[in-house]
Length: 491
Image 1 (spheres, one colour):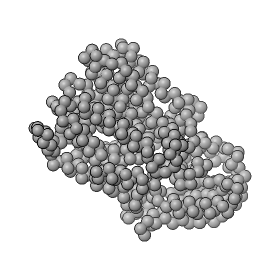
Image 2 (cartoon, one colour):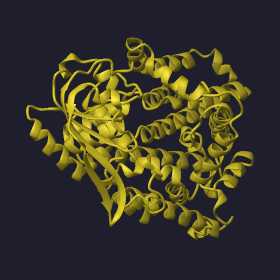
Image 3 (cartoon, one colour):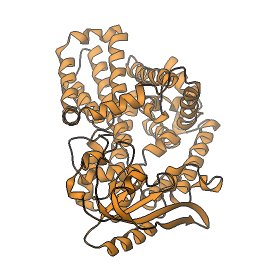
């Protein structure tokens, strides 16, 4: 109940994280795909906002649908794996997932990840049930094709769904009982389904010089400097250990090396869970040693492990006669997760806790606050200019947040980094000659080359954002006259 109340508070009360607003803005500008990510989340956001309108309720409504599908799939998995006390194991699984800081956060935010998680789990469930049927000579082909459709949808959410596919491939290579599938044309039919789902992304990249693929290669694979990155490796491994939950790792290890006798006999589920976890984790650990790897890139690695965890948290034999008794460590996991969830909602919804200890730390979270005040100043200055002036900011984050606050998809970001705005406004001549309101902050001040694109600019008006008497950050709003817009786009 406590987790549910915190989720509801987050859903309705917290202003969109800058990336949530960014992806909402994608939904207002429909396209085959986008620079930063594949398009499925944007398509869903665009559809929901067209039906329900713009609000935090509408923005995170998709999370309700994805979470419902996710936990229903976990119920199906628990029912498949266990022959008794299904409701008990399912309840434990749900509570363990909610108490994981990683999943509480990423199932709450209207990013691409909650759909990635859901479709990856659905694909794995159907893949396992197909393989088990194959071993029993009762394989249902539709399960393999349904798995392919689900993993194709996961690929339309985020590119790191490829790790799940690699995990499936590793199972077919490593387990001799299913190697004969390599000679089964159904496997190649499933591969074709996955490939077809990627057509929108491939088409967008062909039309835009493979910019999205270059972005991920340059960001992830191509190191900025040679040598072993010990700090990046430690950051990836330690943060992963903490955000998944430090109390789960022993259970993960035990469930993979010595699966409980209560689990369905001869099922390939533990094998698939092992390879999906191992392939993704090993690759990202190695990547962290030479380049950059973020903890949430590995978010699909743990999905199949959670249904194996319940037996690590109850006293053997305690479920007889429906007497449920969990080990004390289970309640420690719940308190750990509840503490994180409470601090998260406070940090995002009430006050960025980092503002209590530093004036500079965590600039992303500071951008959640003060947009009603910014709207007033920006609107006032825009009215002074008249005739629908341009609304320009110096970063995609502030542009997306301002667009969401104003419910105006015409806000533009002009910054030094390539982002989706460069594809929406590729040196658009219709912008030239217009006046503009310019929004900036200390994180991304107005670059001189942007100011040089105007005949003249007004002195900036400072908008100081505070919360409960605590200073959070300053924004700056100024007017620009006669925008030239020459050579500002990067792509």
